[in-house]
Image 1 (cartoon, rainbow, N blue to C red):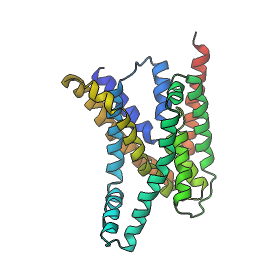
Image 2 (image 1 turned 90 degrees about the horizontal axis):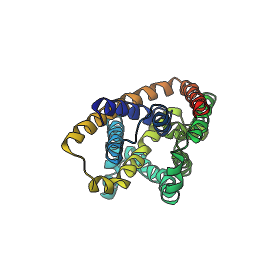
Image 3 (image 1 turned 135 degrees about the vertical axis):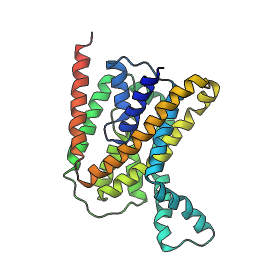
Image 4 (image 1 turned 180 degrees about the vertical axis):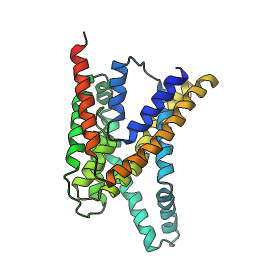
Length: 269
């Protein structure tokens, strides 16, 4: 893999992982339209770790408090302010359950969907409609709790299908449940950490079995750094757009990409 290609793929991965436009959908469409070959397990794992760095960097203060809260509780020193972070630890665990079950039970079926441009296009339409509809949802001032976290987690599990945006779906469901859109976005990003880390761990065995050479690591490292930087900027951008209630911009984009994909599919021999 050439250095420039790794850089481009890193930028695309970092942006689409967090912006509500479906990174998996762009990967499938890109491989068909642009003729990109499979980038390999090692590079895929490193790209996901790059985006993981993005989330940790943006939400480092919240994550520090979430890590600290169980320790303080264990030693009986948890104050009232820390209870919020302890509860969010619980909610992230609850939200992760659906995607773990889905990944274990339907792994082969889901992998088969990544070869279908038609599925991606129609799922991008679903993502687009969710984002366009989001502007009309009223904030009812509800907080994240265990039942709502589980439902948001079901949205994350649904987003395993290529073309469905993980961030878009989880934020949309949280807003439907009456949660403030900025809180919904923050919870969506933080709950992505176990999912991203889990995806990397699942492929760790293949990485160990076929480790990259020093030359490949330079190329892969370039893509990983690009993914981390782009992902950081994408999260900051999306948080600002959500505050302004402008998610419909991404909805129109998804519909345009889906239309382009369907036209390409019809034109293909």
